[in-house]
Image 1 (cartoon, rainbow, N blue to C red):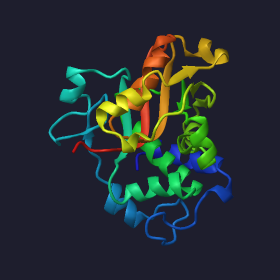
Image 2 (spheres, rainbow, N blue to C red):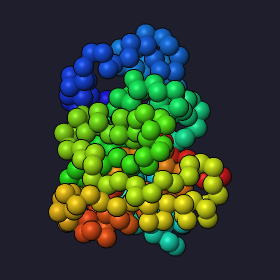
Image 3 (cartoon, rainbow, N blue to C red):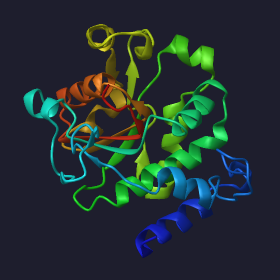
Image 4 (cartoon, one colour):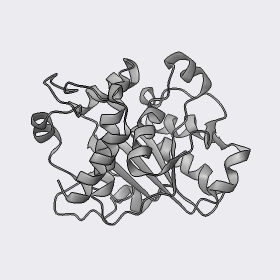
Length: 248
């Protein structure tokens, strides 16, 4: 691990309370004080994909990281870049599902550490001025009891030393779960779904904002939130996600 990453890892772990750190591997249950054992890290996550600079979809190995995929070239989304730690595929999907639907909140710092490493290894990326998590609607938040994106954003903010503003944006209406919809329905589902709170509008102007989420599937939610942020003057929007769904 490069010295810079070792520094950030030490800083991140030192800022987390001991109770927040799992003592066994999230995937194989072997002893792993950092939450992911060396074996699983090497077997499942050591190889990094070349990804589209804008949407983080995996690209072929002979394509540089500053390249954009054909879809982004034809119809650029409102966000400017995306960092993804892993593909949404086995076994990383187990971590996402465990966090989101089984309330395994101890997985959030593990996901955040992998997202931080993915961000810091990209020399072509600049760090955001501050972070926000993709907000949940009130009904979904009441049902789940927590926002998994916010749970990941908290340790990510601490480890990067970048301010997190949880109340930056909110959903002005409840939306259906994107995973159950086809691409056309997803776009309609989240259209005009987000708004900024009055007390944070001034913070957005001319700022580089990092949007944190657990999974990016089509990018429509990220696009719509970026549209809202840029409408209020954001200069740049970067998505930072744990998992990116590969194209089918």
